[in-house]
Image (tube, helix red, strand yellow):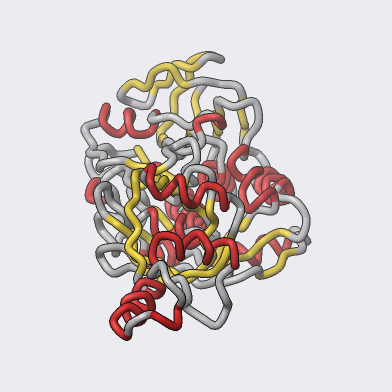
Length: 364
């Protein structure tokens, strides 16, 4: 069968790209290997889908080329997506720091995208087995061909939802570069000595300011887990952490007191083992400095199975920032998480999905 556009991947970017192209009168096919589209959308935001962030800008993204995302984000803003949400009558609210959540269920966003995909053929449970030049695809449901091929297959995070390196392999097959890949927005693990002390506090959460070696910092909640550290502050900083580096944590960034259980455990390691009235001035200063600049040795991450995104991807130097088309392979496009553009926690990655999908869908 022949199509104008084939989109591989029925997630956020793939569905929105298909909808955008179909509105231009293109004959579009979406190929999804899962039995249903939008599986990652469904679980996002605790099931309520933090579908965008009103503050989304280039500074909120990590990429080998930090300016690459500017064009797409400028031409399809958070307010453009919010307007579509409002058009479909979906109730939503702002939670914190510009994050927009459905009042109800993330399924409402999936239903909206499917409604926008009027005229698009969607094949679920269909696997792409081979892609040949000229965009001839052999799939588990038959052979197809297309004039334009859009890769929207995401990254390596959430393998249980079918994540794979398919998009990266296709890029390499057509002579494009793929940057180094690693888990992003991921919980971090502690070394054994610290784990013995803090794992008993699993479930405890409190606000901190955490800073990486390169000076990037986030002030949000930290969560202690049975394996190490998580929570928004840690997930954010994990994208800037590199193996072998330590993190520095300000335990008292504001006026909120620390939980008593944490103070007791932390003091056993860092406080002078004598009554506070007997501390010397030097001991007091050292203790206060540690409270605001606690160096934490990180053993590693919990890997792709717990990562929300994949850092790295198709090298932006091989793509047009205006259209997401390959610079060397006419008619081949890469959008969403498969590209070397990774957003912060809190709706930023969804906004990149919408913006990059719109950029490609407007021209395929």
